[in-house]
Length: 453
Image (tube, rainbow, N blue to C red; front, top):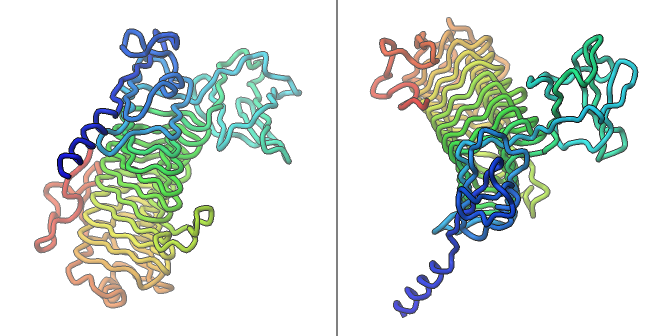
């Protein structure tokens, strides 16, 4: 019996593909066989169509952006041999040049009527991104891109040039592609060393039945919605990720599960990191200058079978070695969310940690300091804190407010905190505790146990 099982395993392993397919958007040709770097395909689509289970696709970094999405649907690998997408630092862009002849003059404005990109479409003017203006009162140099009322497919792109100028005097590019990397029902993938930018929706958009997908050294930037986002019941691991200047850096929703380590998320216009439903982990994280650096909230997943009855839709999150600074809030944790935070620093936001009435928050060995309004806003009784440092120390517990001088009263009201301190941690220019400052409370080291840079 043992011999038969071994033979069966050998047959299975021998059957698994292990081909490598090369793509080069400058020197490649879809008429090539794609098997060597010198005979690579020209398009990502050709490589994906050719690849089979557990193959590798190697994308050449030619210095020219790839103007097509990487779309993987029902294609992946096995636990023993995942499919690998090697990006080599290549960039996938959602931008397309807008030909001058497409514009129709309408008074001081120029318009294009046509299919409306999904999400938050954008117009790039001479290589620079600027926010949309008021569609009813565009000023010189401003633009708008709105869906036609009652039409779920088409929209109107409007642009007002500066006085005496026309569209021909600019380089105008539109974000016509929705997402740069689109993965649907594809499992056991490794996608690495790849950048996505200027898409109307997400840089990396993962949907469907996706299990054990790994993303390494990726970057999502300047996208209309999210830099990285997983949905439904996707399982993803992200190592060394960089997500900036998107609508949101990361949005993981429904019953998805994610595990982040070594990531940087900053200067996104709506949110830094959003976790809704199931469970998520973020370790060795720097997140800053987002309206809300973290937002953790439960969701209702009615579009999955009995999803609204799932016992894990309440959201559980583990945060360790987080450095959060700037923005409107360090972390907002709403009703029914459960969060454990350890060895972290929250500094310089308007509110450090904002915990909703039905939430449960466990905060240890961390610093919450130098916030604009409050270090802690606790709307319920589900907060536990110990071996933390707060400064200067302004707190809300329910409707009751506490000043720094009422530290003893706050500790009595909230409970625990026997080893917590209210004193200046003296953070350096990197928002970490300086070498000559407080390092420990008793036997506990305060702040990150290691720094990710």
